[in-house]
Amino acid sequence: MKLTTTGSFRWRMNDTLFRDEEIYKKAQKTVKDYFEINLRTEVEKRIIWDASKAVMRGFLIQQNSIKRKNQNERKGKILEKIKEGEKKLRSKPKSHEILKEIKYYQVQYMELMNQEIEWKIKQMRQKTFESADKCGKFLSWQLKKRQKLNTVTSLEVDGKIIHKPNEISNCFQGYFRKLYAQGPVNEQEIEEFVKKHGLPKISEQSRRILNEKITGQEIEGAIQKMQLGKAPGPDGLTARYYKVLKEWLVQPLKEVCNEILEGKRHQSRGKKHLSHLYRKLRLKRTRLKTTALYHYLMWITKFLRTLWQKD
Image (cartoon, rainbow, N blue to C red; front, side, top):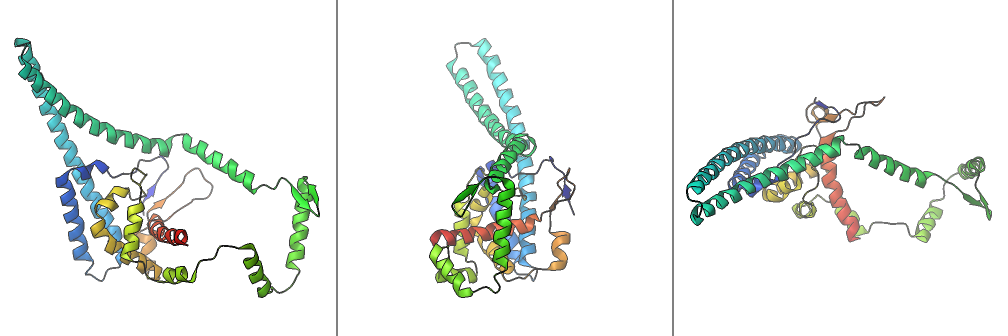
């Protein structure tokens, strides 16, 4: 069981890796071979899916390390070429060929530096979001806004508006005392009330679709709607990972979601091995959240939201 304290840095996938055609092809082969081998076994699909993310995370960390090492070697060689060109330019200051060669290597060096700066800016934004004070300011602003919405400042009773908190509290007490003293509920009155006020209700077609299994087309649609540049989940895998490797991720993800919807879950292993727990310090009560379950619910709610939008 791994506990991550507040403020510690979490791994995040480097999106620029998939710009390299060689790394892109290696990633495709790795994820394809993994699922071809493991989906044939009797292991729970949820365990296979979680393990796939661990495998791909290790692969991406390895490739990022190799790429960074190669970039450093390439930068060193480019700087040597620039220094050699500058020495030649001192002996032949009017040579356009030498000047052109120096500018060529300078452009290559700037491209490498821009890639490093882009990645460091993303890391800095993540650290700022996790550790900076703006998170507390944003949270306090949200709480203040919610408190205003949840606070009753005035109440109209029998055509008269009251403002005193004690009188408002007494009115609510009297209303609910009378409400719960009415006896058994009349279902017909409830149905008439719902029809009269036009409360939202899903159609029979949507109800039928909700009870059916999740399809590959729904998974593809959810991946397609994912926005690039957004902060990743607890696993550190960004939207680009799902978009680039969509062809091999749709089928296993579909099986995982349907397995959960059917209630097939191994209770003895779930909390012990697959739950990544976060402890929020400086609180009297320890708060724990299961990020694996959160990840699956995120996908399922995408499908539900799509159905509501269709209605």
